[in-house]
Image 1 (cartoon, helix red, strand yellow):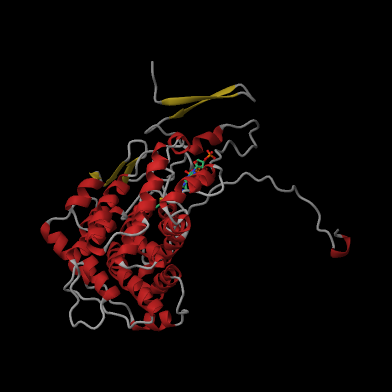
Image 2: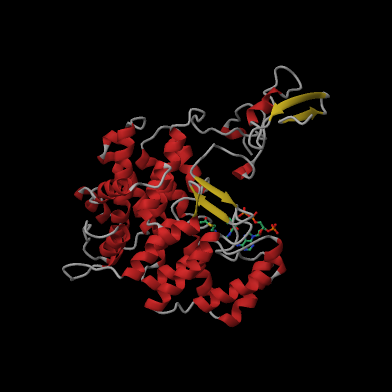
Length: 429
Ligand code: ACO
């Protein structure tokens, strides 16, 4: 008679244990009963980098990496990219349902009316070198927001969380644009509440002497779709970070700053910058085969390829490839596009990549689009951090309200020295 349990026989003792299976999962703590002696700590599972460990129950985002499926709250990413806006998608991620017309209006109003930042943050930004990396500035200024909003510490108050959410989603583009203007030595441009979320971001980035900035609708929509595609991606490195840091019950600004720091790494949100460096290094289509040889020899990686979860074409990469052409039609083709296409063509046919299921990920083409839109490479991860804020907050809130969650604290397998006596300096070799 089939049962939803797993029987485990410990061959050290010959004992058999039966543990329940729920959602194809066993609880790691059920392994603790497996002991040789009653005084033993009990069995633990070892899973560096969480390759096969679920750290939470989530209802936000679903990915099927083998099938190349991504859904936010059940809605396929392709449909959202075609029909939704970033702000509507952010509402969906945070509230679990698409908003009614009135809810969307209210949500947009509140996000839009939290875009201004305290003037002191400008002074704070002025302290950075002219060439400071915008991600470093963004991490610092987001963390600094916690010093302005003391009410943010009240994390179990739903009203407070709502307010910090408006602030975080509203202020992120402002801070991001200010870091860009700081690098250029140009005056900061204040938010324009008449414009859409991406339109206002473009305004704060690129407005010069015109009295009213009017964003190009193609770029505005392209940016909005890119924001939708980057809004969440379940338990990735930065989502895991915000959950882990947030589990100490720190305020959401400090937790978001930690998530941005995680995103900054070249194996995560920094990958799109690395793709452009790589394409520049390759230099020409003719040199692609040689580069691929080096990748296969293990000397370097094909950046923008491969993913911990997707073992198929990243569904976001397909949509992004289309946006790339919309932007190139307007702004001119990136000279690196041909090199990227050749890398993709060879990699998709090559046994090394096919065997390892390495396909283009979201970062393979975004760098080229951002470059064509006029962004410097240092801004690429910032463009990822802005939309990911809604996903981070959705993950953070879900963690906070989950009664099973506690402060994140993994176990270790200690293989260091056993106890030993202190050696005085003169006796050390
Ligand atoms: N180029 C060449 N080989 C690769 C690549 C790559 N981009 N990615 C993985 N491999 C190879 C590895 O060398 C390894 O080969 P082996 O089995 O012979 O040792 C095999 O494929 C498995 O690789 P892992 O590193 O074990 O895969 P993991 O799931 O840990 O890594 C990661 C995923 C970090 C994304 C990896 O594919 C990578 O470094 N890609 C390049 C960086 C990148 O594009 N990152 C962006 C990810 S998307 C995002 O964060 C938004």
